[in-house]
Length: 325
Image (cartoon, rainbow, N blue to C red):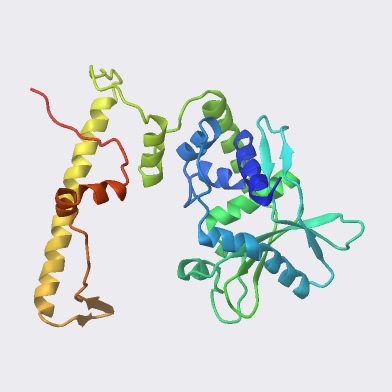
């Protein structure tokens, strides 16, 4: 089994238990997933090609470098890759796929902690891992909530007494934060994930969508095929309220956009031919941007064979509300 096949098998196995990233999403603090996307990954996993980004591939490669740097600055400790840890004594399958175990000696390898590595070289990621002030150390409370919840989940599953979060931010040294078990956070995660698994995964009841783009994509994935007619009659008594809320928010969004556009145009009028302006602590810019776009209408008319060869057809469902007489 080659490395990619092994990774694909690992990713496929994650549908059978709740992991650390799942737990953060289930309690609503993950920037990468939602309860609905976690549910869909468990009950209706998507057959897809590898969608790893360059940042994800870089993170996988740099895991060993970060672990080596951690050991260099902690010479009494060694790290090694563990197998995934699974347990079912919480009333649902829970798992932890750790980056590294930490031990005091190479033989015997008795884990005393875990090491979670993070590559944080982008501007946004660096800000999350920078020291709060010169000379001060980053503390557990300064970590991103989703990352902290993920590590607490791993500590709960493994029952280890300590975790180290090590981030490579591109500076001269790693940012290393010790994380201790927080029983209150762990209990909340376990209870939320148990309810999620029993109610949604075992009960096959999808969680409510949260209004994110990720949930919009999930809903498209759940029902890719459609029945044009006849229209379905929805008898849920809250449906009328949902329609009213949707229309009200759509109206407000258009109002807010119109107000924002007006304010923008007023500022543009004040700037005139100037590309930049300073307003108090704010710097404004209104610069010319040149873009080259293919005239698709003309291309289809004059060179339909080329247009057909290079076109990518995709289908998505579009939502609309209109009043019936």
